[in-house]
Length: 122
Image 1 (cartoon, rainbow, N blue to C red):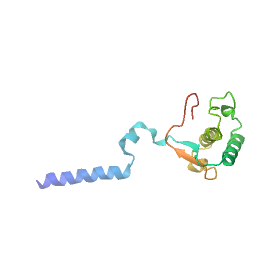
Image 2 (image 1 turned 90 degrees about the vertical axis):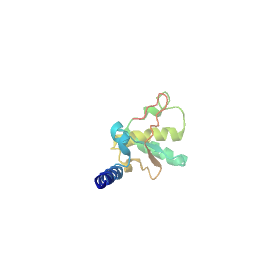
Image 3 (image 1 turned 45 degrees about the vertical axis):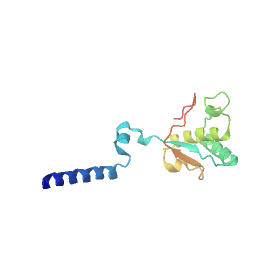
Image 4 (image 1 turned 135 degrees about the vertical axis):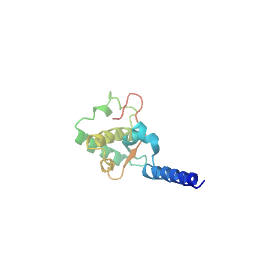
């Protein structure tokens, strides 16, 4: 009986250790999505901050046709939508580090793909 109790204790300790070392659990490790992140504008950001983010990201990227009329991410035609699209493009282009999505505190990293319709976030 002592051996059975000892084996159970070791098994429980092993499982606890796994959960501590891998808090996302095995599902994340198996499906490989733990590294997929996107950068979007915070909903509380002012229009002037959104415009500055668009200007900065587009100057760095040299191509923002995707948010121009006729582009796949033009609609909905709103500052927050356009800013989120180009902020994410910039974030992906320069290394996908947390600081690449800061935008003076107006960026937000998400693990939920913000793609919609014909607008596919990278």
